[in-house]
Length: 436
Image (cartoon, rainbow, N blue to C red; front, side, top):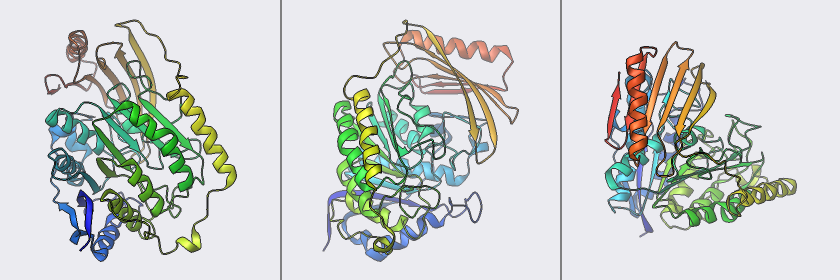
């Protein structure tokens, strides 16, 4: 009888009732073929592979992370709640010690969803990984978390949520933003004033294959993780780097994904993108499950691999080595030039954000209090083309007294001023969420 050397929990949720359109790449077939493949291979009969039932997340779970405009009900469906809730189930299984790792095979995805949510961007409404992480921090006292995002698209939503958090190391390995949505994720994007160096972006060129991904993992990602010493490693397991994917230009295979996952050994993996629903996802997911379970993955292969796969070209290999060397110099060899700020200084950042799925334009003015004791009080003045103008104030979970006082002052002033449609307070110290 087959046995998993590492006990793993699986959570499936295909979201039968949600799709952007019947023919959109993000549709229910993304997981139905995987479910069929897992059943066909008999993985659920393997001793040590345990399937868990999903349950919905609550509005309170979302409120730890997001300012939803005008509220959570307006920007989510039941499928979004169950997708996020499936991640909570996976996290609970690991933190309770029932399994050594867990894989949440859920949709809709989430890594393009930022702290402020006016609608859907990049197929994402709410950030399911961030919702899980903040739930686990509240429930189990976890502090240091590393997120390794291996989706082909830059995880700009997750980066936004953790931009100011020194206790969260966010690493995104993705196709160069000059060639693919969302057009971001460059090495100079390294974190906010209180978390400089806690965001690491690794843009790889089109046609990167498993050789390049595994080289990047060994030379850069694993040393970064070893230095950070996280209590929990999360893999945003996007699978659209696959050579069959219809909307990207990379060259990864199912066996390569399995090798990456076996080396990374995440505590929790969460499905993100991946749109070759028949030719790639069933085999990639199979490889990841088997790798997380400590099983032999040498026989995992797509039916068309021998016909269609092409090795990584030599010029691409040279390009990848240059990129990795440049980023190593910044983040591992002390080359990152950090900006000096005065204690208590209020630093502003202005941004324009486009919701490609819902065609919403948003302008943000962000303020962060520079603090050497905590992640800093944060406020976001957000106006959208939907005629919604809101202010969200975030007090981080470790906030010092001065940052707590600053955040509450910003909230009280805005709530009494009357110039916003809504004003939000996300007080993670008191575990309070207010909306007026």
